Length: 483
Length: 129
Picture 1 (cartoon, rainbow over the protein chains, first blue to last red):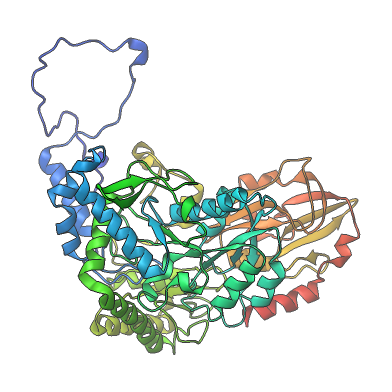
Picture 2 (cartoon, chains in turn orange, red; picture 1 turned 90 degrees about the vertical axis):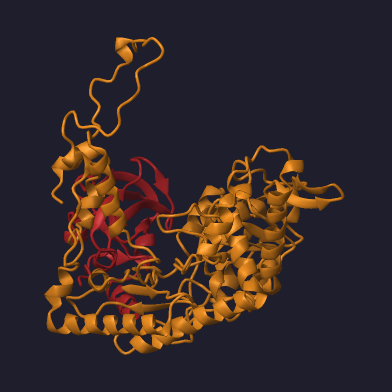
């Protein structure tokens, strides 16, 4: 049955209807000066039941990993264990004010200290700072640290940051924000960094390289040590984008292959909520070269217990207080509840699941690079001149499955990027593969079914061009739009 | 797919064409087709100067935002203001009404060094295989 779009609060508003009655004022009212008064204020007027029904319906329309399969490539939409919620709502954590004196905060400080150590151990680094609030902020942190490192050595002619053409768009954005110039490095025929082009770009104006491994094609950079060496040989440093860490936990430590600083997406690899949830958390870990440039405060252990500490040449704070602390508790819980061997196992299953699915759908949706993939793979979703990747994605919604990532990475035309994660059973993977193949058959027999999809959603195909050109940012402008 | 014979090309999919003393520049049919529906075009200030290969603007579609690069060095003497209201012209007529800028070239010889329509077509054929 097609789901109905609930009427908006503004549409069901009736003058005079109300949910609460405010108590009588106990203090004399003061008039707001006429010049400061708003002439018109559009607020919906509703009964309590109206509001309850509205939000309950919205919650039923919600799409989440708790309800459906969510193979959104590059996003690692893994299950967020409920145990994380139990620990992070313990009152000692959830009710703890960040300005509480350190001697009354020892439990929370110890958690930060131990999580710093866990992330450093997992990635092969000397120290971690849990300050950054998200992956992109972690990237900016790392690049600012690299800049501070060069500046501190008086090496000021390094203005360029090298970025492979398969990178997430946040990488060039980060570099520009940090005041550096982006130099794009092409991929080779296997989907890895073109080593020759990289070497040609390496000189004494290069501040460093930002690299994601496995990369956004879901492929392992086979010659990662040669890549990092080429950058080090010209005096640059290597930033590791940890977006795809879910494929290598307990298998490869980025610090061991020449990465100098990296971030983790706790909301991807370490199962804290995202995709409309969150907030994110993007801790950064680094080796001895950069350890004194980390943002602070970080927690250290002393004879008097745990305490905050600012590294000697710190780039400063990246966030008020101590990072997304509730997320730190969840990630800590996840790491402890899996343990070292458990983390390795989940990466192995994430890779196995992706390869299983890649194999099952390859006849109709061939992978762009026919290699063993890591935790995700990139296929071509275009099925004919009429049926494009976007049509396949929209049709999947009718089958109750979240669409994979589409049209990314940019270097693959008509990309369909699938990441099942380790959370899913073989039955779910089989079902998804069957639906994908069914959709491909529909594309052959009844292409209009795909061109007009989705059919079962509260709203039909959205006009993206119209939406991008005609922004409606206020509810009162909604009348101008046909939904 | 059209490849305007009168234009010269960059591998980053911009074209350049003589227009009297000036050189008109835009993005190729291949580029607009790959980008999909274009919803926004950002153009440089009149009078600004760029070197060949510099990013001079941005073309944004529902799929991606892409920098566009100078096929030739010089000063920007005209910009296509119509694209502010109707960026979709780049999709419908990339080599004509969808032009982006006109440049007063500082070194007109640079034009000859760009790819011919045939070479550019061969280059794009290689991208799709």
